Amino acid sequence: MTIDEFQQHQLIQEAFQDGVDIQNTLGLKLTDDLPEDTTLDELQFYIIRVGFATAHALGWVQQLHHAVHFMTEFKYGRKADDAGVNKSHHLLYNVENYLIRMVSIYDRCLQLTNSVFHLCISEELVNHGAVVSNLHVSRTDVPKLLKAVRKAIKDEEQERHKLIHRHSHIDPELRRIELFYMQSEAAWGSDHKVPFKSLVHMRGQLVKMYTSRRKAEFEAVNAELVNSMAPLFDGLLVEYRRQKVRLAKLV
Image (tube, rainbow, N blue to C red; front, side):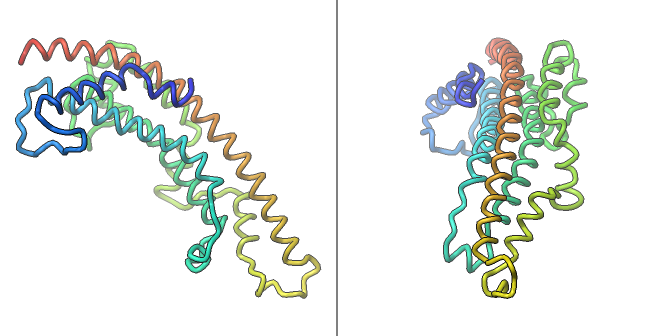
């Protein structure tokens, strides 16, 4: 499944349309924020919460796909030079940003599950154990479907933990690129056997090989992630529709 196909998932379409309908009922435009003093019935409250969680889960997936594009979109210019920013900085920033966001997508899936099942667990207390052990969730296939999403990103969990709590991403190939980019033409001079132009060419080739490898890795992870999230959204769609019918009887 492609990201474009995933964005058309029925849960996403229904949650967003239901939200639009509520906005219209309240006399609000799509660009209007919901006033804090707005009185909502429980069904409206539920739909808005699910729409919010769905939008943020989808946004995270979209950003992971954008990250692959951003890796090769670095334009040299005077402002970048003046700020001391070069290609190696750009690569490190985007690789670390991708790894952090990629593992965090599971947290967004847990938040969405919390909203769809109307568990009303406070956002800061939402975690794997609290969600999958809940009786309403555990008696469905959703824990198994969440596990599949987690499996798609599990290989990078430890790397993300290091980034957040210990030190920057360590990649020997990227470190070599960083060392090459530390050199300036003025500092290099003419004493070296290798001309500075050859150094520039060499580091350019290293960047191409590195970005090609990492982009292929990230694209593969993104594809596996989307393919694991689609069945999860199928399961959440069933519960979303069930909850709407149940809550409609109470309002």
